[in-house]
Length: 246
Image 1 (cartoon, helix red, strand yellow):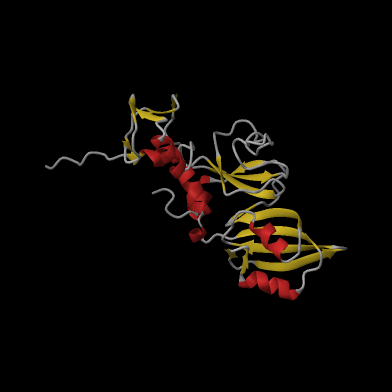
Image 2 (cartoon, helix red, strand yellow; image 1 turned 30 degrees about the vertical axis):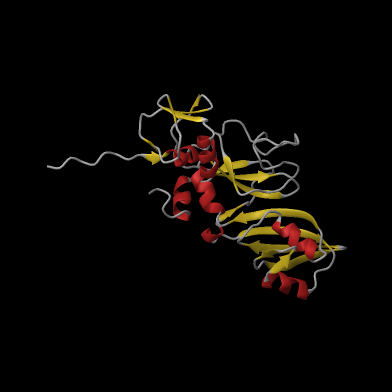
């Protein structure tokens, strides 16, 4: 009877990503900078595989094996930046999370003055997967702009725009309500470039005065209180992210 092939394990960059240490790309950079050791030897390239029982250290700190993939909904207030450490010393999302959460990373970002749904996970690979436009998940927002919104401006959004050499894909937008000099819009997009909504609205001379993300794919902000965090049920997560358990 032939022996079973030896277990190959998991690439170390993926291991670090799933452990929530960094994205896979950033983990590879950490490896090349000599910051990662395994079983008391420096890891010199990312094609190293981690097996059960291997001891991995980053900057001298032992890394626990990745836990099961988990996902949380977070109602981000404005005034916080979505980063673990801000060079300008501004308050961050991760400094204001409730106690008791493991180390988490965000799926995408919301800028300083934006509010609403921010997904958090302990799995860097899941974060990267759900950020990709190829995932096809709509991001939905409520957006308040200063000024009236003529139908031709909505059509320009739907057709896609080029601003300062950057092409922005089609954006679905509809008028919800008009309040004096302001207009509330429902906005949906898939691509999600940096500050995309603010940039395209500025290009249409419609400055954004408030931006609230209400959904990211199938996950909704709902009635989650400002600053609140709620974990997504594991069964629901597996149903919404095919292949997650493989």
